[in-house]
Image 1: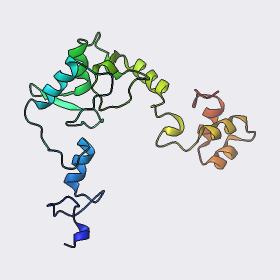
Image 2: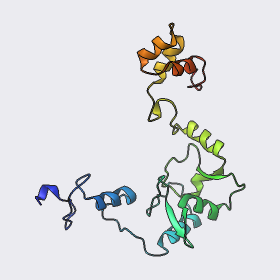
Image 3: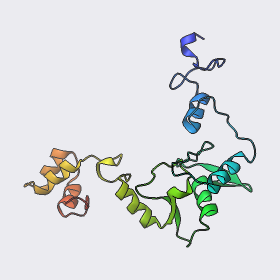
Length: 193
C-alpha cells in the first residue's frame, strides 16, 4: 500500500480513514482525546480516579479520561453494572437522588462539559429543571439550532407580520401552510416575542 494511504501513526500499516489515522486510532482519539490511548484501563483504575476526584474536588472541570457512553458522558463498570461517571460521582459526594424522578445534571452557568465529573459542578434536578438549565445556558436545540430547522428567528418574525395566505407565505419560505399557521397563532416558536 502506498505510504500516503496508511495511518500516520508510526508502526501502524492500516489504511487511513479520518484525520490521517486508521479507524482504530481515530476512535481512540475521539473517545479519549489521544490516538495512542489504551483501549482498556486496568481493572479498578476508573473507579480509583473517580474516588480521588470525589475526595478532594477542585474548582475546575475534571475531565473523565476513560470510556465514554453513547450520549457523551463518561461510563464505568461497578459490580458488573455500567453506570455514568457524573452520576456516580454525585452519589458518592452528595448522596443518593432525593427522589425517583431526579437526574444528575450539570449546574447552570458553571459547566456544560458532558465529560466533567467534578461533583461541585453537578446537582440533582428534575427533567424539567434540567431542560430549563439548557435554555438558560443556551445549550438547548430549539429553533434554528435544531438540526432539522428550515427557518431562522428572523424568518419567523417576518412570517408573523406578513400579509397574504398561509399557502403563499409557505411557498416563499419552503415550509407547509400548517407551519405558517402555527407560527402566526404562536403555537410554535413560542419563546420569541
